[in-house]
Length: 569
Ligand code: FYN
Ligand code: ADP
Ligand code: MG
Image 1 (cartoon, helix red, strand yellow):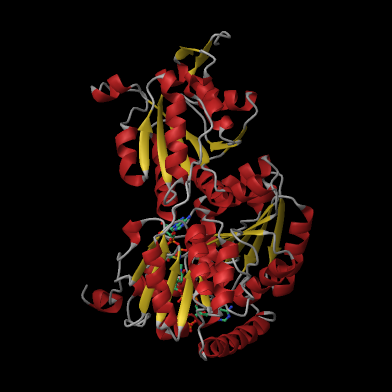
Image 2 (image 1 turned 30 degrees about the vertical axis):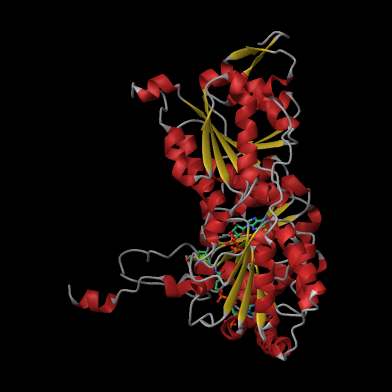
């Protein structure tokens, strides 16, 4: 142990995290980081131990999105690092601020490939999957390493940072010169980026000549905590907006400007698209026809110029942080008395009302569906969230994700987390743990039965920390649904077990378990589970035929003429 005049690398690491206001670490310990986690607890930090690293790193990433400070994940070397790597990549793709710290082997052994216990060149392997990778070899560099990692994770386009920590850096000592040991609180880690006057004027000129502008609000605006400015722009121009899934709630989903229930109509007919922290990637059909009006003009506010023209010409790129950019744009709208006079908002609202009426009919019918369908299973969650908007909602799956997104309104920012930019499974329980830990609020993890399987063992973690997380599994017996049949002598590739008692995974660890097979049973179980504040699982048994292939994105599948292939045998 260090005497009062010297400090170990581990002590300096913890000091640097704490001085920058970081309180929680999400991880799975082992060689060489177990004592590091213990030290964190001794020094007053909270360490949350998971059952698999991908969930721990997902939790840290979600913590970053929710709080704006980088989430901190800790893994062991090689296999632990590799288990966490997909979640590091996912955080970077989602623009979530995260620092993944992994123990590693001493460089001389790695560089001479001398074969170490769980030896791997993690530092170089991590680089393509993160915003930046740093390796610390000496205790005296720890403060700088943490400062660089935090600043890189939160500044500009937020993302994942890898911090490689060999055992020798953890153990090495340095003289505590009482001059702060290079450990300090970073000044302005995510500086404002003010857009140019020209970029604002260019955008104003487009808006002035627009009849049908549509604002698309992305999770970048959510990360920027720019809800006030987003609402002010939309209200000032009195135009429709489309929230991307993790931007839901920046403006309450029941706002009269929402075009969410008229998505196709609004995208196809808009003559001006105003992108606020949303990328024109696959989720927005790359900004192209037939979903978009190819002749529409595009204004894009983004903190990363790399994103402009990624998929189509951007007629008015505004490089800046969301808050500063919207402030300048709104001020210019007021100064130049820009108004959008047109029937456009009314036209969108008419389509919204018509689609909402269709949805209401389906939901009403779902109440009596036997066997239970998705509408009957999801309506109780819509009702619960409308009454308890401060509940966090995490969701993953195919039909579960897509139908839940359309049916469950969000009223508060950053309260919905889901499969995100990549559309991946296995984020549910890690994200739910982070939401509960970071906010103290109740959390619903709305899971497809296949999705739940990816990190179901984290139910033990949820129970061990007694977190107010209710997992709702929509069990339709398979990936997409439970009725697929290809050949007689084996289950179909998408088959799972419709009779699976997923709920036992809660009582197995001291949580509560519920089974529900009607709308009323789901409703009752949900209220009981949420009111209890206990960890719980509700296994909602659906009609195995409920659900379409890949939910709303079957168009992305590679289709094969299986009948023809079978006939060719
Ligand atoms: C939406 N809609 C509604 C409502 N909300 N109708 C009535 N009431 C409400 N509240 C309408 C909306 O206008 C659309 O109809 C339709 O419902 C679907 O809306 P959605 O889901 O917003 O639109 P769409 O086309 O699905 O969006 C494309 C997408 C989305 C790619 C952005 O599908 C998505 O985010 N998918 C994520 C997929 C994913 O990550 N899956 C995980 C792996 S699944 P129209 O306007 O008539 O079109 C592995 O297989
Ligand atoms: P969505 O999936 O909701 O469309 P994306 O993750 O695709 O959102 O896009 C987020 C965009 O927001 C990224 O291009 C990112 O650079 C940008 N962004 C993130 N934070 C900010 C910020 N503070 N200001 C402006 N743009 C931001
Ligand atoms: Mg399923």
